Amino acid sequence: MKKLFTTFIILSIALTITSEVQAQQPINPMQEGVWIGTAGIGIGNTYGLAGGGSGFGLKFTAERGMWDVGVGVITLGGEFGFAHKNYNTPGFKWGYNNINIGARSAYHFGWDVEGLDTYAGIPLGLSFGSYSGNYHHYYERNTNVDLYLGFFIGASYFFNEHFGVNAEMGYSTTFFQIGIAYKF
Image 1: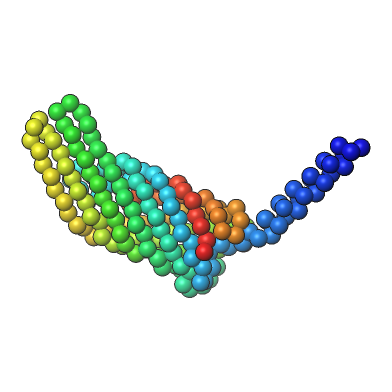
Image 2 (image 1 turned 180 degrees about the horizontal axis):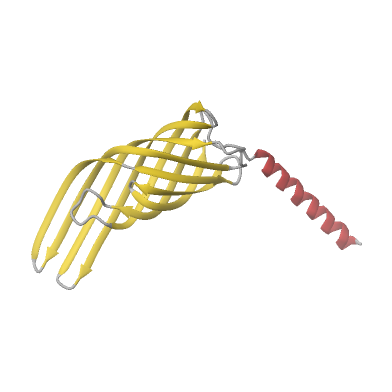
C-alpha cells in the first residue's frame, strides 16, 4: 500500500509539472516585440572565393518581431557567421575561410501549432574571405570583401517559453545547420 501511495504522489507531481510546462509554452513563439536568437552548426558556404564549395560552418542570429502581417510576423535582425573548408591532397593544400556579418529579415508563419515557429527570409551583408594554397611549393594567399545576398527557410520548436531547437537551410553562411533557439 505504501508503494502504491508513493507511486501515486510521484505521478501526481510529474503530471503537475508537465501541465505547468505545457501551459507556459506559447502558441506562436514569434510575436511583435519579441526577440529570438539562434546558434547553429552545419555545412558552411565559402562563396565568393575561388573554388567555393562547402565545409564547416557556424551561424548566430538575432531577430525582433517588428510587424504583425496577416497570420504571421515580419522580423528584422542580424547574423554573424563563419565558414571554413580545406583540401589536403599530395602536392595540394588549400584553405578557405569566410566571416559574414549582415542584416536579415524574415516572415514567420503563424500556424497556431504550440511551440512551432517556421520562417523564410533573406540575409544581406558583407563577406570577409581569405584563401591560402600551396601547389607543389608555390604558395598563394588572397583576401577579399564581397557583398552577400541569400535566402533561407527554417523552423524552431520551443519546449517551453524560452528554449527550443532550430534548423535552417538555404544560401547563406550555412547551407544547412541545426542548433538551439532562445526567446528573449
